[in-house]
Image (cartoon, rainbow, N blue to C red; front, side, top):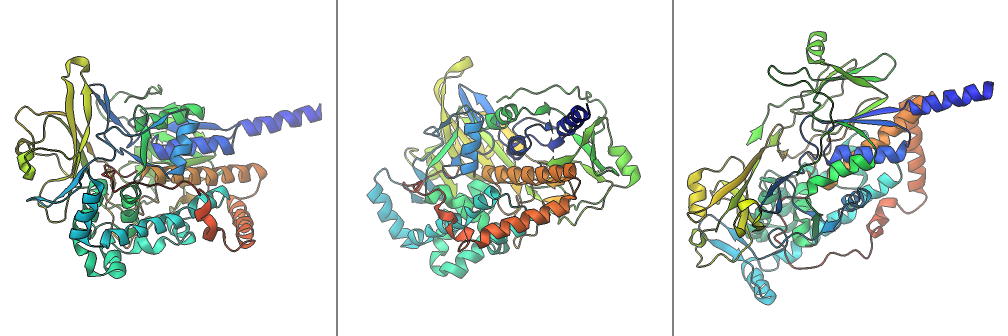
Length: 550
């Protein structure tokens, strides 16, 4: 009888493991997926304030799934590939309008560089305008990625890191985030690549991040250039926004959406009480119904401080539950989440960059670019162009569903602010139609990079983790997946430590010691990490594949 009671007690304790994930984008879905692997019996609750998918979202029009956010995924984004397979989703090559096609660079007056259908002619043009600069530069992103692969090694080892700086130092990439892309190019390649930097490199980076070489840190700039220097990309069949809901379902997570969180309070026993944000006047109270998948600088500079009793009380709506660990898988900036019951660590102020995505049905006015015929599927914008848009790309051709004209051409533009009618009238023929506009704000599409970058911690308290702290090093779906996995491993370590009766700090120390022992057995794990995925070489010519960093 005693053995039976002990067995029931142990089963009950195991079943009582409860982890909350706040945010149902790629980071939150990745966290739920890896939590299920680490804690098979845990109750995983996911709270999303807006829409499943986060910044991976589609506009469905004329038989097309038009990506409002990140459009392409680089072939060597290994976690995204693995997560798509785990979710049972198919990968596909982007359509002719989204993948590699003829591209050009516009300086506000004319096309200063244009790709040719003939590869040899493109090569001659490249040498004529940039000499050997491009061929020298393209080695740098590849070398960066060799080091970046060390992160996968560290994750496989179960290594924990309190901060992004600690993680980046472990793989030798921290220094790239302490200088701008412009500074790196000048320091490493001299003034001979200034024209290349201000036209081609700046054009790709503006298209991806709506920011130039002076604004981007060098790591973000290098990651941005990867699909251009080694073009091989894919997307999720049906839209990248399908990935987070499918992953959450596969992880058997309990999902509530819309369910904005207003307060996370640490209790005296070390657990966390999570409260919904109070309903605003005129809003409907959250009923906890699961949501089905569907297809300028923002905010003040803020740092996270412990909420005063009055603020905490005001932020506390209905209780959502008490949890052994909580993962905040959304930027704290603009989230409206208050923290109480502990003294948060220092979190540097961070702003985000608004990006507006506009879809236009119609024909590009060739004369706007000084052409007789528009033959380019992507136009990048050079530094100093003086235009309000940062990238133009052919998104596809409609199939004529729902009264839409058959084979109508859909174009996608990125900008910092909504584009005025006057500009669109100059760029498109008279019968154009704006079919969709989405402003990524609150907090924004990506951080407003500001090298040298300063980072908040992954670990906010024992049992509370922030899976968006790495984003101001580089913002991409693969980074979000990495953050989700890292937070899940740290949360699982904490939960297991609490169940064993030791502190999370003791468990983390033991984990770091074990991982260090593994590392010291060889000549250095990170030195060999580039061979982890050997044989998977991306080849091809320079792609337009810049249309939203993946």
